[in-house]
Structure formats: structure tokens, C-alpha cells
Image (cartoon, rainbow, N blue to C red; front, side, top):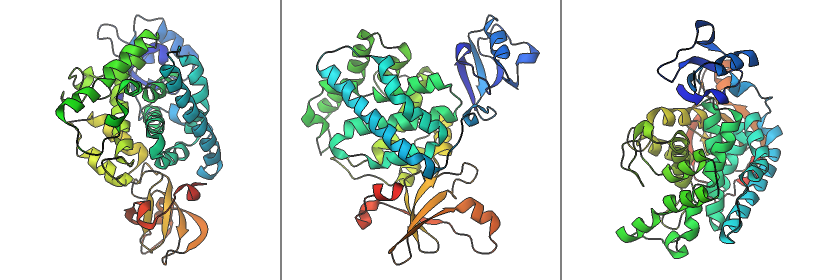
Length: 380
């Protein structure tokens, strides 16, 4: 997938295709190749080129961090998640008390979570299924930030860009501070007048962030995260590539997490049902290539799905397999009679390659409420 990035954000491992300026070209020894050293980056920076196209699928940067297993990472991810959740609470308290935002300090609070995602993105992704309805504004913002970081990293964005993208997602709904609480919690359908009022949160949020000297990429993402690919979104009716890159990413992750969360007006969808629903809106609500990348990196059965296997046993998806999206790694926790068993980790893709005869596969994704389950007891 080709992505346009600033030359100042280049990193070793990125596969550079060509200049994105339209008037200056890269020399042959610097185009259509992976950046192998800081010398290559310096050479590009010395040219009259501000942006280049990179091929995220050919870039190796996403594999440049030491990797951990889900079991090794989940406790670190949980601690980092709770720390970031407290950070979001602190941000909203600062806004309500009319204090000054300290974006650089907030980035430090969120940094451990980004580092955890770099080591094993599935661990943090699985925590997004645990959103609490009583803290929805905070958990939804954080879950969207996690999913956005995972997608941005998959697309080859630099570590610094992923950090900024995550902050933009965490701040996407700050404009709701000035919305009536009863309107945000309304169970029925919003009237036309009520919806028009809710829509103001994007402009209110971006205007406030601009007054706080927030980086342009952040306040523009907050303003535009409800724009749609076909131009039917708000507040400006932007379409296609006119929508800021971060906003294109955040809109997908925002919608997915909202669909998989319980709300006053509807129950949560299962993760794979939400994926199907998102896919139905390709080319209308979402950038098709961005949506394709999202589905590839989170999987058909995202981490945190509670599933039934073809042998009758039940488990939780803990890690996705991009090359075999229907065959993730599953932590099996119940037998076919729905009795608790000692957890067993099964890599369905590897099992499919090694075993002859009938494959073990997922036959159903089940909402935990069906069995009155609390998923958090099975994630670590």
C-alpha cells in the first residue's frame, strides 16, 4: 500500500518508491529501495523534496521491534492501558477546570502503551473488548487510540507519527465536554435538532485544541474524524484524500469500537460482525485501502473474540495471523460441554499446516453476554 509521508519522518526499514512532490525526483540509488542507513535518510533530506511515497507492504520497519508472545505481553499491556486511561481522565479534568493541556507530557504517559503495541499488538487489542459503559467516553477514546496505533504501525508510519496519531484519537471527542450529558446518554433516536447539536463537538474540540497550541495534525484530525470518503460526513463535507490521513484512520477505528461497545440505544456487535458491517461501507464512509489494511491487521476474528471451534470447544482469540485471517491463535478455556478446562493455546494456522484430515477452525463468534461471561478473566 502506497502512503505519502514527510521526508522528516523517514526511518530505516521504510521502502521508498519515489518523490511525492511532483516536481523533484529521487535519484536511482534512493528510489524503489528500502532505507538501510541514516546516510540514506540524510541524502534524501538534502534534496529539494518534502514528501515521498513509501510502500508499507514492502517496508520492514513494523518488524524492527523485539517481539513478545501474547502471554508475555498481556500484563504489561494491561498496566500500560490503565495508565493511559488515567491520562485521559486527567486530560478531561484539565479541560473542565480550564487548565492548559500539556501534550508532550501526555505522550510520555501513553508511550508505554505504544511500546507494548510495538512488541505485540494483539495484547493491547484484546483489552479493547473490556470497555466499561460507565466510563465510555474515556475507554472509547483509548480503545480508538490503540486501534489507530495498530493500524498506523501496520501502514508503516514512524514511531513519532504513531504517537501523534494516538494522541489525536484520545482527544477526538474533547468537544463533548460542552455537550449536554442527557443528550449523550439518550436511549432513543436523536431528533434532527439534537443531531445538529451533537455534530458541533468536532468544531468545538478542534477550536479548543487550536487555542492550546496543539499540533496541526492533531486538531485537524479531531475536526475531521467524522468526514466520510464519499463526502457525506461533517463538518465540511470533505471527501477522498482531502480528508487528513490521521482522520481517515481514526474514523475507521472509532466506528469499529463504537459498534463493539454497549450503548444506551443498542447492544454491542460481536467483533467479526462489526468487521462485516465496516466492510459494507467501503467506498462510502471509509477509504477502501485504509479499511482493507484495518481488516488485515486486526483480522476477521479480532483479538478478544469469544469463539466456538469446530470440535465444540470454546476460547478467546489472542493473536491474528495476517496470512491466514480465518485461522488465528486461540486460547481454549471451555470444553464442548462448556466446562472450564486448563487453558490451551492453539495456533489454528500452524495446526492446519501440520495436521492431515479435518481442520480445526472457528465456526461461530459469540457475544460473551450469551453465557454471562466476563472476558477479562480469560485474557491473562
